[in-house]
Image (cartoon, rainbow, N blue to C red; front, side, top):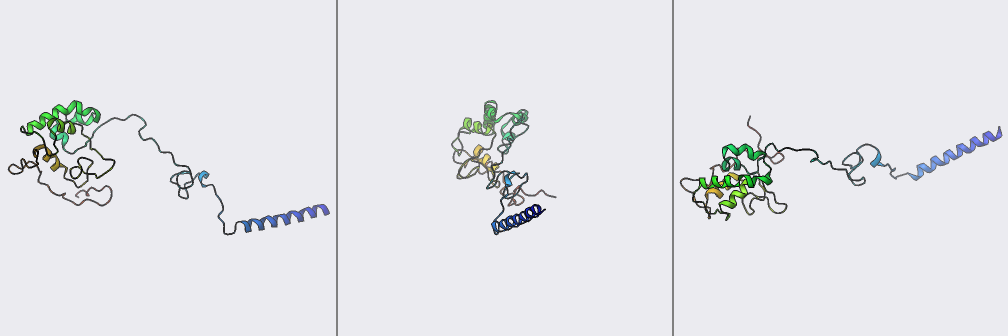
Length: 212
């Protein structure tokens, strides 16, 4: 009986000792918690148990897995409507860009010369064959570096939303080598629309709101 009481006293003393040590050891110190394996998104994680400053990077899903079919496209505004023959306009929308030049270049060149039989070169220094080759691959180029402009200090490195792309296209078609041809009567190097009919937004999607 005395042995049992002594054992109980020793256990109580040890318990008090460990409790006191735990309280003292963690005063003003953060308690470690493995956030990267707790099954929840916490801390500065960007996903569940991944990303952020402490956890391994989150895996990025490959959105290009599977089969894809081209249904429609529009690179440079108005190109398909202006340069392509009506019976081939739907076809351009479903042909891969890498194949468009070989299929549509001659059609585009014929249309270009039909619109201006005196075309030699344009303000970009491109002859009819070169210009048709650029337009036939109906994709909007984007420069990895430098300014993004359709026609300005840079040429076709992208497009600012407020740029007058139609005026640029008309200038390249009808403006001649100096950009001054067809600048009087008739005026063919501009569509006469200088500004948008509604202000652009300052945040995504940037396009003006629709009219109600």
